[in-house]
Amino acid sequence: MTTQAQTKKLLQPFEIDGLTLANRVAMAPLTRARSGLNRIPNTLMAQYYAQRATAGLIISEATSISPQGNGWNQSPGIYSDEMVEGWKLTTEAVHAQGGVIFLQLWHTGRASHSDFHNGDLPVSASAFAISGDGVHTPDGQKKPHEVPRSLNTDEIPGIVEDYRRATQRAQAAGFDGVEIHSANGYLLDQFLQSKINHRTDNYGGSIENRYRILGEVVEAVTGVFPANRVAVRLSPNGAFNDVGSPDYREQFTYVAGQLDQFSLAYLHVMDGTGFGFHELGEPMSLAEFRAVFHGPLMGNVGYTSQSAETAIANGDADLIAFGRPYISNPDLVERFANDWPLTESKDMSTWYSNDEIGYTDYLKYLQP
Image (cartoon, rainbow, N blue to C red; front, side, top):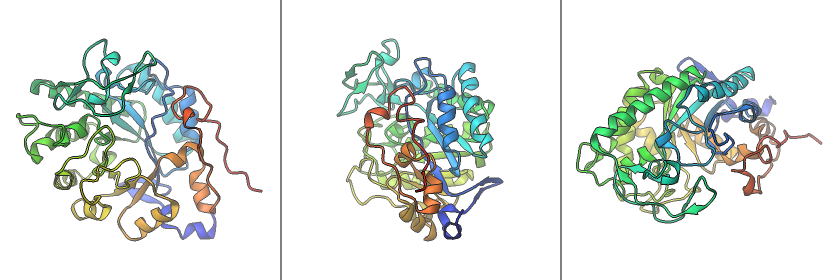
């Protein structure tokens, strides 16, 4: 690392309660659809993650906690012994490079389709369909979103148990921790959103009740991994999957305050608006979350090395996650350290294709 790089706060080590990260750069979760039809992680995926192991922290692509949680073609799962063995290829490859990797736990909820579930409807907090673009289904067609089935109250403990079992499997697969995906309009975010959650039981009707399932999931997951190896992801400003509620500021401030009581590894906040913004008010900032959440805070969406450096230097964030830059720059940390130019990923058709093209074939920077 150059002398100049050594002065960059973004590139300084960071300690998560006994877990040392080499720098404050996180590789954001990136769904890449390389797990095959059986959803079992493979050697190609292990190569991809190992190439990017100089990130201070890798957060895996979103990974289904159960068959019911599936909603994306050829995305991986963590609900069988075969999936555990498949993920071991990745964790061992990343650890061999000195890296740290968390698994992101995922249930797509209403963002799925009955074609993924043998004709059974996807589930959600309430029976409201996503308005807008459709779903790429297993038969290769893009179909309209369906009206989901509202989960019965007595089904919710089973969902929470799925998160707990998935965490056990993540631990068995060698992950250093887990991140609970409660963002981007997927199941746990669907419960948080008053736009979607019209329930009249203990999981709806108030800010406190809409948080309840997330709180129960965190309780269950921290019964497997210690809380300092568990994180949560939120997207308070997001519009993806037709979310965005008028009381977003009150809801997410409350959520962050409740999560603050767990001493989590970090809180991952998608504060940038480049992934879609609901425009229901001013975007929530990292500074707002810092006021109510006192553990490590991670920012995400649209950051450059310069803006990330500023956020950390100002004390707004401890870590910054980078998504799209990691698609085409496996050596992103080294490029930041040396002020080398970034390679752009211009061919979006390869982002979700099913082979090595646009996945493991990006090269490290070649100095002139």
